[in-house]
Image (cartoon, rainbow, N blue to C red; front, side, top):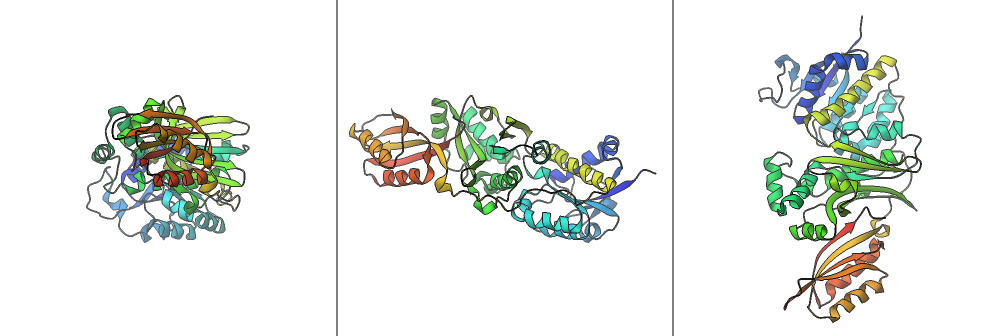
Length: 430
């Protein structure tokens, strides 16, 4: 008789509904791939009477997590609740109960991945988390398996669909930040409280996981520099376009002298760069390797079905390990290793917009203050020269972050400079 593996699903929200649909509607092909029947045995929900996104038999639903976590018939637990708790506790209980665990939870993996992976090895089971980064885009398993022989030099890209949708709308439609945020919330791309997305926290969690896998070392979440898109204005978007750039929220990790740099922030990207064409809610991750060169993984970074697809891919991997009797044999990254380089030592190029006194001498003041800290300029353009003020648009050569911040402090104190209107890093230039 063909073997059957029973699955307990923790959560039936957006992603959980996608997982359920794929597991039930694609049952035949999934059985062939897994080598055994996959059966959803129980689903944890908060409210039994709530209207669902999918039709589910009522006897599958429960509000008691122990009906899944302590059920000896369930071999695979799928966590798609989101948030740190109670998800982390449920994952830990499932692992301690000897169950294979699949999760899409970037917050839990970014903060507690090291302990949970260690726990899985101790219990002789597996913890899968492909869907925790970039939704439906397969990136973690390719880094662990297909690129296992590669010396990865850098991994970076667009890993948050909400902010990418907003920046795209600001660029294509000329809208300001408040307008595009309201639009994103109305369309369901942004949460009622959008802080995790627009402040860069979501992207930082994903980068901590991505970098840990890519460099086979632990990159702690609290070492990832993070700033969001809240201060990006329509003027920034227009100024970037005039210079041949688009603005994207990038997650960047690179192997550099002294360790790993890991940072999330808005950046000007040249219009001819592949990431510049990644619009809307789509994501893209670029991997640069010593032997393979440059690869780009592109696709839907979130959503019911794309993320559900990544989750079910892990379910099939978990089922195959059960069928082969090789649970708990995988060795995933997150090992102690190279330190994360302090932001002050990172080198980037900068775009800087100043509002200054409309006097010829102010140009000399700005160039002198920059050169005093060793900050070399690529260009300095004057815009909107008027009776009361003028705008200076500056681009720098590669500059160490610490030196640039010292220049910035001096510029803010100079009386002939009314305001530092904007400063944004530039990425993607040779």
